[in-house]
Length: 253
Length: 253
Picture 1 (cartoon, one colour):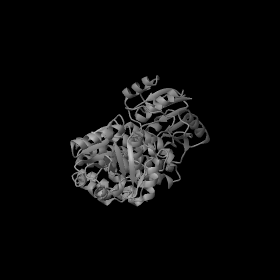
Picture 2 (cartoon, rainbow over the protein chains, first blue to last red):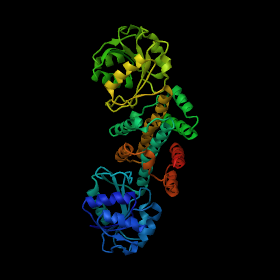
Picture 3 (cartoon, each protein chain N blue to C red):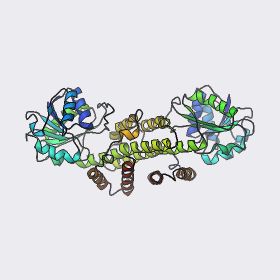
Picture 4 (cartoon, chains in turn green, yellow):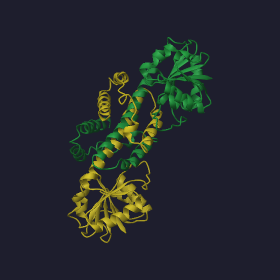
């Protein structure tokens, strides 16, 4: 199966590397910035494409991995209309691709990708959606090469999954950043928290998070919460978040 | 060194097991509920104590690991005044112990302890504070048996560390629980998020969280944030948290 990869950001880069490692044949890489296309094409040992309309028309699959807002623009420039066209976004409806092929779909790898860190795809849930049986078969063939955890979800379910991932990943990382900031402001090292952070995420690998909630809010320990709020009185952002998240813990009990 | 353990909750249980494994001699366990004292004493192969005032007066150290509010009460009932008296709380000042011995202090293991899950102490930061050189020496001897990561902090620093741990651990786990709830309400399985959660916490083991922040807020991707808020309009708690945490990400940039 010959694949054209359209995009060169974090998702495109990690996905491209994983596809390559899984034995897929990547016949070209396009990026809005040609230098980035050259750089990723070199990494994937394939050729860079200067314009989407110049992409190899004989490829089987065109994977669009760009900013959500640009997906439709990129799809409209693909030079053929009878091939599988796929995007990789968690939050964009599959139907944005409907005018550009009869066979279209979504391949959304549910993971956080950073330039700085390699990621193994084998345990990553890969979420699929497809417009036709043919699209579904082709997507499954690609997805199962990447991971054993392949799921078919609707656009609406995928959007909910994406929102939940924002809570579990993006917001969580931000809480780490806020904790780091607070420690730095008191000459304390974030390294003190790293084992705790690891254990917190390991604990829910085999438990429901609600069943392992700890801390003053779930105990309704008002004295400690009051002392904590007092320590946060000079950082209004943290103060407000502390209140709201503590109340939310109480509400969920 | 002979130790009396006063308390039988999660911290007392995990600490007691770690002390036992580290070769410390636990000569008695007390708990407000005698059945719990019996149960922990049996686990630690020592004897249960029905009242604090009946604790072995010849012990070297009395470790108080009870709810913050009860620390002073328990300390006041210890039958001797010339031994090391220690509490294990993250947020209570050391000085609550000052009337009960000249040698007192704090041994605060910075980790989240749940009944359901064993924890290795060897990488856990153990935070110490002591009233005297003698207390400091004894505490260090105990702490270094448990972990290689031993730190002296003041009561105020310890309180800041504790608040930051609430953000990085308790609030983080609550975000997992909210994500779980959201998924369940749409017939989706929390298992989809587990690899993402693990990767998010692994990523910051070697990076600063601020440098690996991902998601729509840090990209200022208003369209996606709007779509997410739209998906949350029937869950006002989540809606408000989404807004506040996204704004906080923007503020920290």
